[in-house]
Image (cartoon, rainbow, N blue to C red; front, side, top):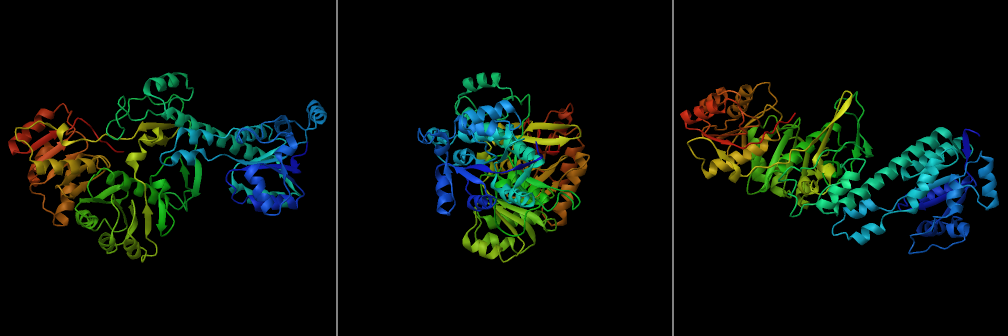
Length: 558
């Protein structure tokens, strides 16, 4: 058979009707007969296009509230019949089955439906498409004889190829379209599987996972009396035996970390987060912008009270708490006003006029928040290139989808998969290991420092009071240097360390860390504990009159 397939008949059945009329008008220009269903046919006729209903082909009306309309041999035989197989051709002729050369189908919006609030299971089930995936799979299986289009963004490309090929589509294009089609149906089925799994109770889910050939990546147990909330407790579910990743490209980026690297953003189907942030103003987001903004969102989400964080190269240069967003921001800025230049700012509250005015005093790349008051937007949008992001915050979304609690990294020859570090520590869980007991002020300061330290690259040291970070030491090869760098930053900007607290993301291997802290006038230390030399560090703290608290949890961040 010819490498090119001349398109003579097309079946068009679309949930997303974007560009449908223009696409079918272009097909008509090549003399293509259009077959369609329901709302799509109605739309095309309203645009003055000639359309034949599927019921005219099958001899059956749509039935069962539209659940059955294309599931018929005269549709699937027209898609699956091999044009170069004499037996297939004879059978098609005998039963009056005329070949269909092109299928344009997109599916009921199941993913969009379940992302809404208070969606009933009945509504979700009615948005599970049956006929659409069946047609897509039939056409894709027979890509040698049929072209299948599942995304409106492909219409322009297909018409351009037909214009260049006298109304035909090449074998190479048909194979690529088939690959995209099977990818789409796989992602669709996994979304349904994940949703249905979320409705099962723990014992039912465990039985399902025993039979699941893909592992449990796409299943999760909802929070109830049998399962702790993920943001407070890591899940005890095992990681999958087989890792299946389906992600639609959302957009190409200008470049990657550097101009010579290509980059793109892909959608994992989660609700909220930086990938789905609404860009209210400013330049296009870059690869590095997304990484830094994600780090800012993760950190500011740790706090229940009004908070502001400033991120530079994925590390916090400053974190502040306050009664207002402005107060929180000014405290964050005071930690390191030099590093804040060109940084990313995130708030966990709606940004008002005063906070916007404070941020506008310096140059920053991005401001991210749950929302912005109109008067705040008026101030911020005066800066032409400032990216303003309205973000749905992560803590709630991480409970909705198991993929929201996993991190994926590629290494040469493989992929690393781990759970996100979702554990939080409360003051009542502190293990006080020194003779001296912490005051309430010290407890609040240690909690702030500990939350920030969790989000700093290792080896991480954070010096703080109860309202703000004073110095951050990130990414050093030894912990004593991290302490010295944190102290140097505090001293550089005139922030008093005397009486403040220090957090370390991992245990102290030697007492020299406590000795260094004592030189600075640190009053309390929070760290995981667990070193074989813990007793030496505790003894040193007792000698200096420093409070020391163990959390029992390490927060390395590589």
